[in-house]
Each structure stands twice: as C-alpha cells, then as structure tokens.
Image 1 (cartoon, protein in one colour):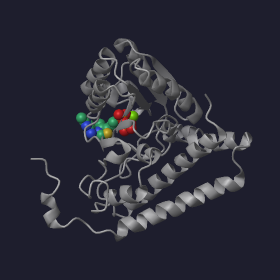
Image 2 (cartoon, helix red, strand yellow):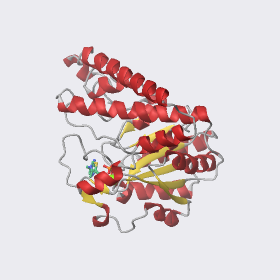
Image 3 (cartoon, rainbow, N blue to C red):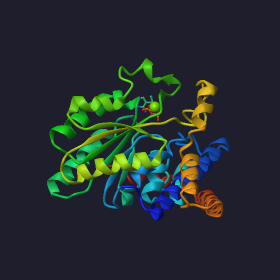
Length: 316
Ligand SMILES: Cc1ncc(C[n+]2csc(CCOP(=O)(O)OP(=O)(O)O)c2C)c(N)n1
Ligand SMILES: [Mg+2]
C-alpha cells in the first residue's frame, strides 16, 4: 500500500536528515575530530523505505555503512555524533566509535566484522519466537557481505526455523574498490533466496516507494509467522568506501548514478504529486541543517571519557 501523503513527507524528512547527518560526519572526519573514518551511506537512503516501517519494538541489525538505520529508528543525532567523536555522552560512552549500539531503538550494535550481525538477527528472532511475540528483525548487509559464511548459515537457520527476519541486501556493486563480478558468482543476490526456500526480490533501491512496497510485504510475512524473506536493493554509494579512502571507481559510472539520487528522485515525485512544495523542501533542509549543527556543538562540547572509565562497562 502506498504510504499516505503524511507518511511520504515523514519518509522524505528522514532521508534528508540522514543525508545531512552523513555530510556533517564526513566533514568531521576531514577536520580530524572523528578518529579513523566514517563509511558514508550517502546515495543509499532509499533503504529508509524499509527501515521506517519497523515498529518501535522491532529490531535492526546492521553493518558498517551509513547512519540511516539510526536516523530511521529515531536515534538522537547528538548522541550519535558524540559517540563518533569518542565522547562520554555518546551512545556507547565514547567506547564504541562507529560501532554504535542504541538499545532503546532496538539496534544491537553495528558489527565490526562484516556478516557478524547476521547470527545476532537469528538469535533475536529466536527469542521473539520463543516468547510468542509478533516483532520482526530487519538485518541489513552489503552484497560483499552476502558471501560470508555467517550470512549463509544465518539465512538457512532463519528459514529452517521460520524466524521473523527480513534480510535486506544493499547491493551497491562494490566491496571497497573491487567490483562485484570479481567476488560474487550471482549478480542478483536475491537469487540466493532459492537456496533457502524463501521469497527473494530484486528492488530498485534508489526508488524509496518501491523499497517501501517490497518491505511492507516482507515485514507482514515475518510478523504473521510465515518466515524470512530476502530483499535486494540495487543501489550505489555516492561517496568513496570510507571518507578517507581513495575512490578508484569509474567517474562516469558515478555521474550516471548521481542522476538517480534517491532523495532527488523522491523530491521530484513528491513535488509533482503536490505532496511537497518548494517552500516545504527548503524548510525541511534548513531544519535538518540546524539539527545537525546543534548535534555537532553538543558532541564538541562533551568531554572525553576519564582514564578511570576504562574499567567501567567491562564484561567479566
Ligand atoms: C570479516 C571481515 N572481513 C573484512 C572486513 C573489512 N571490510 C569492512 S567493510 C568491507 C566491504 C563490505 O562490502 P559490502 O558488504 O558490499 O558493503 P559496502 O561497503 O559496499 O556497503 C570489508 C571487506 C571486515 N570488517 N570483516
Ligand atoms: Mg557493496
């Protein structure tokens, strides 16, 4: 079912807020305030069409790329940026860096190893099934990550046990600078679903309404106890692998994909259908900019953990 005009506006606003968050984080890498790097999700915000349909009590497991999982679930950009700057006010008290967890919003931690979060999705979904709940787990991974053993064994386990998992593969065609044909035997990751006897669907990942429609069905299926599905979102990252990485991809390819920017496409469609006006577009962008500036100030003004904090939050 197509989202209502109000839902479409909400979705558009989430996409813009996510983009501005990413731009803010990218600039903080360049200024040296974020140690290490940030793996930007700019260009892949169409995934929000799936994420924003989750209920507050659902779960999300998630790899290394982007902030839209957090923004889409309602995480606070102040606490996200504070974490990236290593400050004690951050989601993981400055100890997680970009491996952020936001338990309040059902995000159990960005995994350090790619595919490390897939078994986590199976564990959470098993707990939901044992408790007899109707929550779902959405688990997002890249097409490079689709080849990890953890991903395959997790998809198999979820299918065997009929678990409420929605697997979402963001196929951006590259693992770092390496193109997919060099490491993936099938070009449509959704084809792997056949091996686990679950529905698999290829979706235009830069068409947020198409993502919404496909995810709605997969979520409903999982919630009704009919088991997992695999959605493959064909997309492209508009930034290098990481903000400090060299981009070796063909610039012409990047230019072609930039014309398919999911935010620009959605904005045009919303203006054409009368859901969005030029004035509202500007207001949404300005509000997002102001929000992320406030978040940046909060992060900058926060203090680093004290040396004695090293002995807190230990699992022993
Ligand atoms: C087990 C493991 N191997 C390698 C890495 C290093 N690594 C981090 S991201 C990444 C690429 C993943 O590619 P893909 O799944 O397509 O996601 P994308 O970066 O394209 O969003 C790699 C190899 C890692 N984190 N964990
Ligand atoms: Mg990839």
